[in-house]
Amino acid sequence: MEPTFTTVIHQRTQWKRICRTEAVTGAASRTFRRTLKFFLHDFKPSITCLLEPRVSGDHANEICFDLGFDQWLRVEAFGFSGRIWVFWKNEIQVGTSMTHPQFFLLKVTEDNSQPWNLSFVYGSPDHALRRHLFEDLSQEDLNIQGPWLSVGDYNSVLSIDEVSNSTNFSSSRCAGFRKWIFDEGLIDLGFEGSQFTWCRGLSSTSFKESRLDRALCNLDWRMRFPDASVLHLPIVSSDHAPLLIRTMEMQNFTGPRSFKYNAAWFLHPNFSNIIKNNWNAEYDLEHTKKELASKLQNWNRNSFGNIFQRKRRVLARINGVQRALEIHPRTDLIRLSNKLQMELEEILNQEELY
Image (cartoon, rainbow, N blue to C red; front, side, top):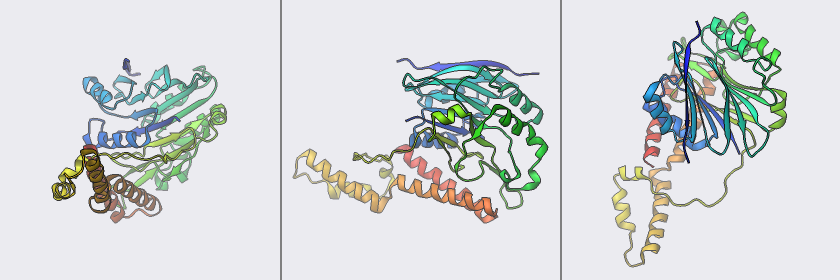
């Protein structure tokens, strides 16, 4: 029996990126929401999809409002645990073509250009139910015309190379996924970063990884966005890696940065002394503020430690450890990964104060 739906659409009155994340611990978790906000702040996606949030009703609405997007869409599913939420900004127009237990099909329009199709997928862990995904998500049956990008957790792999433990691989269970990709003429966009997007286990004997998440597109979409790329972000506060899809090449910001007061500085025992020792009342207020700002920036860089640099450094270490785990799972590396994630959580708490 198929689950029933209640569709919830919110619209606030008044170079694109797509981010897909998975809330395995639940979107109500403060740790997960803090991490999600960190990714949203750093990458500023135009469209974001959250899979398996495990929250519904008014609580789900509160979380959706809190993320700060202009519009969002989610489905309440009874018997299937409403597993797909989509958020977007007013810089693009998003229309809903279809909602389904295992995917959303959307139409995206930007800059008055021709629209393109976007599907967000959460494949059921149940093999029998997952067959319905590959039967129902069809260009011909859904009249999908023009460019099409399909992103998500398909809960399937394509080959033995996409699992860390060959005993977990079943060629017959992947046959439907391979056939669907071939029949639909889809292209795997590939990835940068770690090979696997899902991991579980606390010791070398129980640890396992797979590439369950990916971005696929048809030829029309690939020709429209020839520079598009996929980045596997580090696995943090979840057992899935967020996927960041860029539709164009990155452009580095080189302009001057303004001074910002960091509320986390107040927690440092020497902060009040830094203020007292560097506040010169002999000059006018504006001059004194500029001098103090310069001193605080130097102190932050040399003593307190720049939050963003520390965050990037810890993220790089997490990424390195996770790459090492792909080659040789070791209990000490698993523990180090967990320790670094706790350190990142502390940094994100300081950043939240900032």
